[in-house]
Length: 181
Image (cartoon, rainbow, N blue to C red; front, side, top):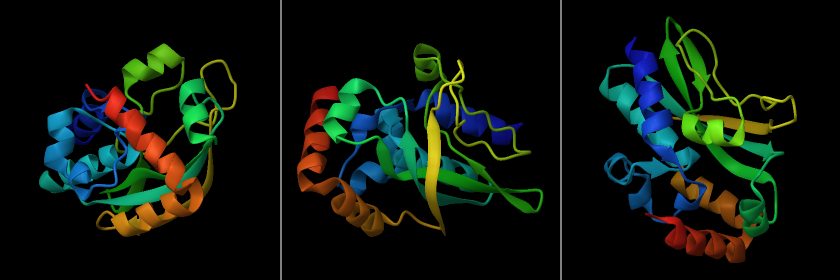
């Protein structure tokens, strides 16, 4: 099934890297994301929408504020919060309805951290599981908005500035420069 294959390509072949955050629009373009082979949630959602659309499948972007109860210590220290503002994910139009899907965490990371990978088969929503494999709290959706036919870049950057602040954004960019392969 093409829908599942496209989802799995973005989920697993474009590795999740929370340090790939950027304030440059260029870093949210599909060719850039593909060339790097990694991205964070918004970048991966942009790519998933583009690939579905190229295959003739309607897709659009959504955003959510989520609480991650299992943020790795290094990332939590940098961010100084466990809330991720503007988590990017998708809606895909199949069989007369819009289904939600998030390709964010690749299966390799999920295996390493013992969390449930998100699997999308085109029949039901596929978003983060609220619990990890051993039943501990993992992800909680706090607020969701959208849909967006195109990346609301200015809104995202404004939300980041308002909620994280310029100092944290600079730490995030600096961390990305150290973590990019």
